Image 1 (spheres, rainbow, N blue to C red):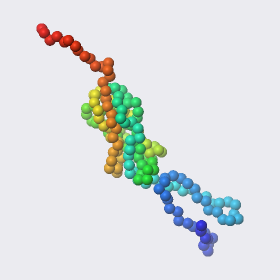
Image 2 (cartoon, rainbow, N blue to C red; image 1 turned 45 degrees about the vertical axis):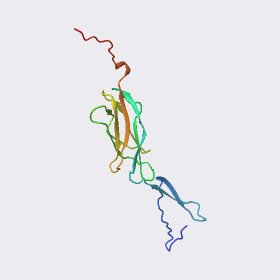
Image 3 (cartoon, rainbow, N blue to C red; image 1 turned 180 degrees about the vertical axis):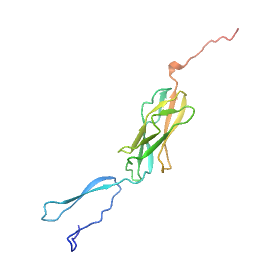
Image 4 (tube, helix red, strand yellow; image 1 turned 30 degrees about the vertical axis):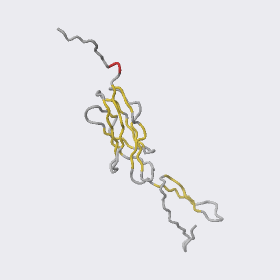
Amino acid sequence: TSITDANGLASVIASANNIAGSYSISASINGVAAAAMFQLNNMAGPSASIAIAAGTPQTAILGDAFTSPLVVHVADAQGNPIVGELVTFLAPASGASANLSETNAVTDVSGNASVTASANLLAGSYVVTASVSGIGESASFALGNQVEAADLIFIDGFDTTP
């Protein structure tokens, strides 16, 4: 509620709450049919956390794609999703590793960023990390590259005599 001043103007001070999103406020006067409408938008705060949304743990056959994409969720301190944040994905440079579809991805309207991955040609377990500049923590995906059973060869009764 507000009272008009000498010029017929009324005002209020509005403060944003912790929930990001759009909303509207109306101002009305008794006896006047049309209300004045104001469209407002609470913006998310700065990025404060990164967490795994999907894609870990999982394994793939050497050279094959992993079944699920690697997905992280980025949020502000109140848990609101961050839109348009750059996320960097990093696979090991040597040994068992993954070939990533890209090393940088941008968060969508839900605060999620994702890449796809394929196992390289070396068997083993490893971690792919995802990070956001300014957040001290990173998200870690536990991945493994496996040899296909048909690729294993067993030699039994090998004779070494000349």
